Figure (cartoon, rainbow, N blue to C red):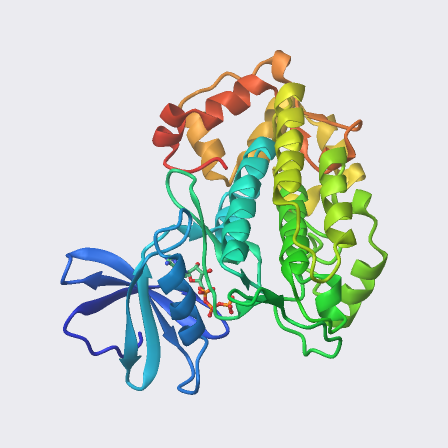
Length: 367
Ligand SMILES: Nc1ncnc2c1ncn2[C@@H]1O[C@H](COP(=O)(O)OP(=O)(O)OP(=O)(O)O)[C@@H](O)[C@H]1O
């Protein structure tokens, strides 16, 4: 555990660790409430100063942590902010990728709004990934980690930062825009491209460069794949394809039409809702067509119990004895490529699993 001498804060537990800092849950004795403290790993000029600068300005905006305190401890800079929930990546893996498309898009809309708010303050994030979005018990999404943020425009003179194509790589390869890989100065369009990769990852449970088999690609290979990727490889929904095409067509300085983009995601959500399909990923590691067919030969009941054997959801579903009858056959949905790796349950199961009453008894989330 980190050494943090303070009369005000008592470190409780480690919440997360990144490349630049460690984040701890701590008790704030002044307010008798728990907070999150991010402590920089290095003692040199830190990213925490940028984090503090942004939190100072953005505190109070919906979906952003509140700045509580900052300073140095043991010569290491730290920042104290509101304690939030688990990050999207952890949550996604904890629930074994069980997630409804509707909920992904719902979360996506919130992520999109957070990005727009940050852009409204003339900053770009430059390191968007599922780990940077935290989600609370009420499914409110928060954006964090502003250490790599950068002003894209001088807010007084309204002059955009100049174009430059020999920038070092900044961000996370899996979710970075292609232009970032190519060394092009980032602007608003790059955050929005990262957003597309995040949503595609949450929808499919994978990206071409983040396969289910745990293969890891280096930055060069990821760049190559991003160069040739077709929008239809990321999304099947026409609205989301259009979203990606629009973002990729943005000029460096162009102010994105956020309302248009918002309408496109809303349209995608509307399509899912009106199709009345409810979709779960059961286990991303076993979703090849042949394995699905093999599984389908087994009896319906056995398949369900096998698939959910180790999951909280299943255990709890078993406990509360939801009847799984023939009218809710598991099936592979072939007609919607978006869902080709997913298995579909009829609404009655999904609705049961998503109902707050059941979730309370499950003591787990269904995202
Ligand atoms: N306010 C908070 N409340 C709860 N958990 C948090 C909070 N801030 C950060 N965390 C947890 O700590 C993790 C790391 O935080 P953060 O991304 O700020 O660190 P970092 O060192 O900048 O990471 P990276 O290397 O990804 O840039 C987050 O993914 C999250 O799980």
